[in-house]
Structure formats: structure tokens, C-alpha cells
Image (tube, rainbow over all chains, first blue to last red; front, side, top):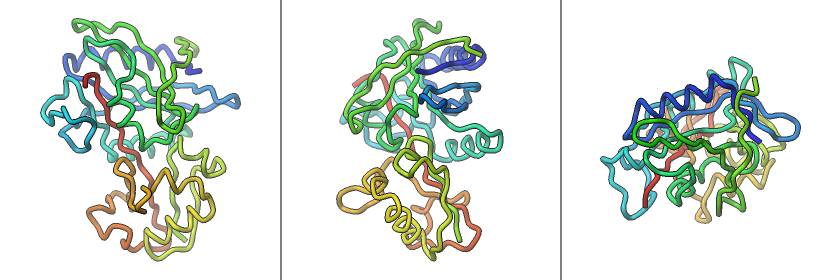
Length: 158
Length: 93
């Protein structure tokens, strides 16, 4: 289960609207609970630096941030230091799907392979329709990275 | 001793550790030492050909080892080496 603070949910929704029609990306800071629930106290917006750095599909267009995102490891490293200094961990990431449902694509699965998967890291997707934030969902990478499985997302927990 | 930090989702393969301190002279020997202690981490870091996976990045301080000497990059006592994932994706085919 993912417990998302109202503040973090608001940050994700506004970030997704502000980059529309491009995808946005960010990291989720918080902590893991004993039952492997993830509590997110803060969403940290990161720049979508997609420029074809990695190969996701034959149809990749290095120019199009409308349907691709790239979370640069340097931004991850900076966020990780910030999280550790505040006694938190990175417990997930988020990105937006402009005019597309909050369900992961196969490109999302390919691009998640560096993370490791399991219940301890959430992949949150915020759908945006015609510029307005729509549904949001949280996914786990399971079965050795073969597929995503949806998990419960609870807002306004904190 | 150099310290190697492990990202959240890979800690399950490292006994839950967020970081480890090991004696090593290069990044490669540090990674080998880490995998010796936690063998299941190996396949998450390296391909079957023994190369670092394309979505896995290793930083010494603020520098990506791909732009240094790769796994031959020297590490000094007190250095922090970070394992950092790149995450990518997108909505359409």
C-alpha cells in the first residue's frame, strides 16, 4: 500500500499539469513501514531530461517528452542525499501520462529495470486530461521485472 | 575503507542495508566485494556478460564512472560510491 500525504498528492498533480502536454517526473520521499507499506511525506519534482539516453522501444523519438521521460541519475543522487539528510528514503517515483490512462506501458516496464522492483518501491502514474490532473495510481514492479501490479493508494493519510 | 550506498529497492538483496563499508582499491573490486557478501545483488547490477546493466549507474562522489575509468576507477579511503538507477518510460509505444 502507498500512503500519500495530501501535500505530496498536490505536488504531483500540479507538476503534471504544469508540464502538460509533456510528461513530468519526480521522486517520492518518505519511509517504509514494517508491513512494507510506503509512507510518502514529500514529492520532489525533477526535470524530465529525456533526450534518447536509453533505448525503450524501436519507436523512440529522442525529441518527444510528450510520451517519454528520463530521470537522470544525477537528479536521483541529489534527491537521495537530501532524503538521507532528512532521515527519509526514496520510496518511489512518479511520472505523468498526458491524455493517457494511469496504467504503465511496456516502455515504463523496460525503463524501470534499474530499480530492483518489489513492494518497497512505488511507481506512481498521474493521468492528465486536457491539461487537468485526472486519476492517479500506484504500481509495483513484480515477477522479476516482468510486469506491474497495482497497489492500493491512500491519499491524505498524514 | 570506502562506503557504497545501495538504493532503496535493491536493499532487499543486501540484507536491508542502506550502505556498506569495504576495503577496495577500485570500483570493480568494491562491487565484487559487495556481490560476494550479497550474491543475489549480482544479477541486478550486472548482465549475464558481466557488464554493468544499462539502467544501473555507479558514481564516485559526484562523478559517473562511465566518464572516469569505468570499473578500474580508483577509490580512496573515505570515498562514497553510489549505486544509482536511471528511470525512464513513457505512455505510448
